[in-house]
Length: 207
Image 1 (spheres, one colour):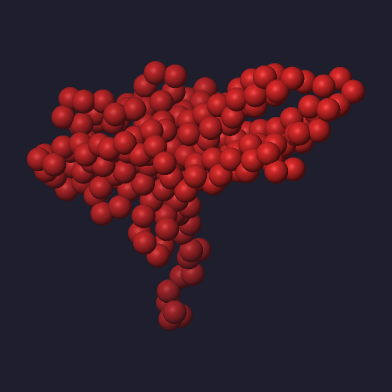
Image 2: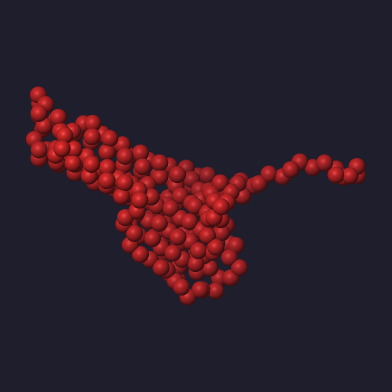
């Protein structure tokens, strides 16, 4: 810096730029967008119920002073199991990733891959779940649920980042690829959860 130049403070990223940086993987260049509170609650509830079942519905309850019948244990455990798996699938694992002009929407049971240039609009949807409109077809985006507080604050940061990515597309000419959808029921998180429940069930046979 020469004597004639004036010192200027270093400019900081705007809130939107900072939100994008927070969601960017610098190694892969991939943006991952998701409702963080839903993800946290989904995993805590799913695994917390496994622990609750192991502690409260173990084999010893069958011979307690006030025992439960095997049918009652099975009914309670089945109900807790279904809530656990549902919490993980519906709350814990939905997300959206954006990389090189392609968006991958991970919903509870299906994934959708679309080119950002094919997206006609992104709008708020039923129960706070936004929709991507692609070739007249709406894709529910479960991983970007907006709460009432998000609405009052002008929308979630993840939605704002995704809107920005859509606006960066140099051309809105359809790529002709359309929507590529597939069933994606199993993943590593669900496999681990099912393995934990299987171990719990086996404990009644081997302990």
